[in-house]
View 1 (cartoon, rainbow over the protein chains, first blue to last red):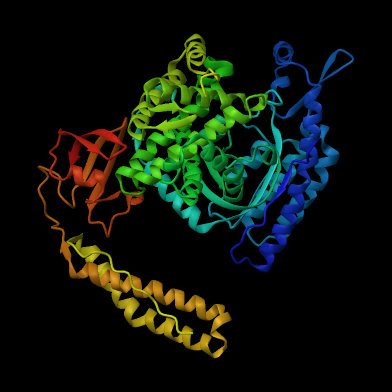
View 2 (cartoon, one colour; view 1 turned 45 degrees about the vertical axis):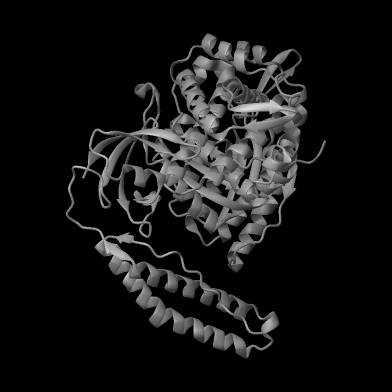
Length: 434
Length: 163
């Protein structure tokens, strides 16, 4: 199996000697996450099924903790916390973080590293998460390391995956993204059912990174943006942080967006878009997707929608994100072409996932979401297919985004399981694309 | 090799500024002309002494900065030439440049001030009078519903308050 580790070599801003020393240690720590994730992947092959897990959880609810490994040994389910199961592999990672915390000249960063090192060894992940969120002034170096729950990770039945990224803050991109954030998140968006929504839109931080390392799950999925943490009580109290990744975005452009762009759009259409427009648009629509999450925290949605929740929640964020980008246009922050590029880039991502990863079970929520998006656009006439090419009508797409966004938010706020299942059945077909 | 800096001047039409915006623009222009120009000239002079201008990164960087500063000076001069100061006292009966407007649009409530394009900064709730939203709102009355349109986006927008 391919090692889940990607090293990038970006042009970095000028760093001090101390920062360079710390950065080297962080990269060493990040590399050590790859074998742990590999171990998780090997164990996932032999894992018990979800029904068995839920049945056992009735007797012992801790079995569902995202930070435990559940194994069947001699017919009996054995639950082991991650920090015990992987202690031997985690010790050198923790040591590296402690070493970095000792030498860094940034005290807040050092404190968070120390908490993270401790969490890896004793399972106090929430304490470490809060320490990171409490950092007041954005530091130029950045790391995320340890087990993290991601909505689209289905491999381990909702369990956390080991992952790491190491990067350096890109000042210009970070300023730009915070500028967008201030525009779109300063609007008081109405909630369909006010009492059901957790409002955190004024507690969101955002940054853009030049990435040096992706390890574990990050390397497998090549995320371009994340909004963490996902634990709602922590988010409600301490807020969340959006991180966008430059080099993984370049990689996605090269491997997914551009080949799909060339495949699904006609030559005259393609001539209207520059590669650089699409590269920025990809980062921009993902930023908007992550911002949109801030308006979509409905308390009972995960319970009501069950296995459809992740798909609806992720799709709702993409659609609302594109819709909110409309206000950037109306306020002269972006132009028509930039909004069109965002729609084109998102369509490319959707068609790529449907076409290339439809057999990847770990991506099912995303694939289903994109199928709903594209089928909805086809049904409304906003998107047409002719001769194997996609023909978008941007004005109609924007109107359809509005309609789809309202349906999805209704499902999240007050939808029943049956309503959601019927909706997914109607629009989630993967067979409508030529 | 002699390098020259091209100066790009944006079209000069009426530019609306608040009195503070006008004072800020004048102060910035003075600072750039009196301090920054001299500072850059000194950097270029020092960089020349390192020799070989073809492979002299300090010289390139200083020349690049000089270009940016000259561009900004030209832009500010142009702005000040066509500057019109927004009246601080204005009617709240309808939206004018300088009005702070509360609107309902796309399922959200938003509030911002309409300013000239030079001072516009949507992230700080200052919207340009030339933006699709700003230009459509000008002249609208409290309670009025207007349609903001671009080739892609069309939104109904209700004016809730004007101050």
